[in-house]
Amino acid sequence: MPLTSVELTYLPGLRDVLADEVAQVLPGARGVRDVRDRDDALALGLPGSLAAVAGLRTAVAAWVVVHLDVPRPKSFTSPEHLRRIVDAMYASLRVGGSSTFRFEAAGADSPAFTRLGDLLHEATGLLHDPGTGDLVVRVRRGLRRGDVDPGWDVLVRVGPRPLSARTWRVADFPGAVNATIAAAVARLAEVRPADRVLNLMAGSGTLLVERLLAGPVAAAVAVDRDAAALDAARANLEAARLLSRPPRPVLVRADATDPDALRAAVTAPLGGPADVVLADPPWGTLHGSHADAPRLHAGLLRAAHAVAAPGARLVVLTHEVKVMERVVRGAADLWVPRSETRVFAKGHHPRIHVLDRR
Image (spheres, rainbow, N blue to C red):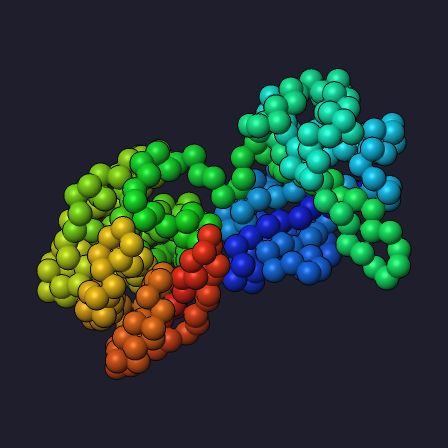
């Protein structure tokens, strides 16, 4: 069976997390490798349908890649090259329907691309909408090897939206976690069906939603002291259809830095101590303050320890890099560091810390 060339983009820092997910979700993938000179893309070949690609949660987007050995985009309109681009568009349409398309390319408003747009419209029936077209057709120079002309790559995005777009996010809360980072947190925390999952400082519920979508749990509780945040989390959990199936997650208003209050609030709905604790402390731009970060992070580690089972995992996503490093050193009698992952996202460089309870 012929292989379709696919490129997966991701947030820099999450390469290994995505590669692990690819191995699980796309077992038929062949030749998984880094895209040369890029720190945000994996290339691979896939046999058959691309439908399973839509199940990737740590990728930003997936693209069907067509390489054309031609000197300039004007040559794309020849029948043999046009047919390959149209086939790539139909491969995308079979995953998620679109009615419009647009180009992402230097010179996208040139006569060559206008002509190409007309031909693609004739072949697919999709309208060429240069501003807001759903199906994205990206054009770039190929990878140069020595003195050989690199040709051109045409990349067609799989589906009408990036994979990072979440339909369940109906309540957008200030400072909400990037969903692909949240999915990475869920995978780094390990997905075990017997886990009792506790999400502290839950905000609008992104970490909990992504963990519950990653696999079954024995129980789940989200904690935040802000009633508005819990309302947003409830709306997002409902949109993800997670409130209507067991075990239904429980939302609790409590202080996640108070060990006694937290223990009293979550032990009963969890059915015992937590096996995994997820947290995304506020980092001072929209919530909280940088000055309060040491108290907040130290309190989080103490409170999480108080409600966690022996050997439980604590996964903290934080922008307070130096504060978290100091706090972890100060809590050496409570938690053992396992790993630290640095992520690059729109000018921010948060860290994902995985700790094991002593």
